Every structure is written in structure tokens, then in C-alpha cells.
Image (cartoon, rainbow, N blue to C red; front, side):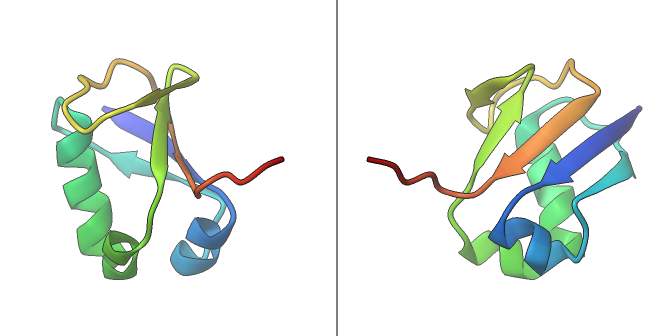
Length: 77
């Protein structure tokens, strides 16, 4: 399947892009993260969250959406 992967903030700076299409044959977010980390090793050292179907999810989530977003930590007040 082809996934549209979006990167925001510092994560976009590390990857050098705001979004890309990735050919993905896995089923879980963990497998996608592994693929992305191989392409962008510096991401492994950064804090981030992942949104799937507009919800923050964990690594064992099964991917059913065509769009995934890697989000930097949020701060607010």
C-alpha cells in the first residue's frame, strides 16, 4: 500500500520534506516507524507522536489510514 506520510516542525527539518509517499507492506505503526528510521536515522533520537485517523496512537496500532502524521512534542499554556 502507499501511505502519505507527513512530518511537522523539527521532524520536517530532519527529513527535509513536509510529506512523502512511502510504499509500505507492513501492518503496524511499529513496522512503519522501522522503515522511516532506516531512511532518517536521526528521527530515532527525537521525541514525537504519530497521528492515524486524526488520533494520537501507539506503535502497535494497525495501519488502516492512507495518511500518517509524525508530530513533534506540543507545548502550550
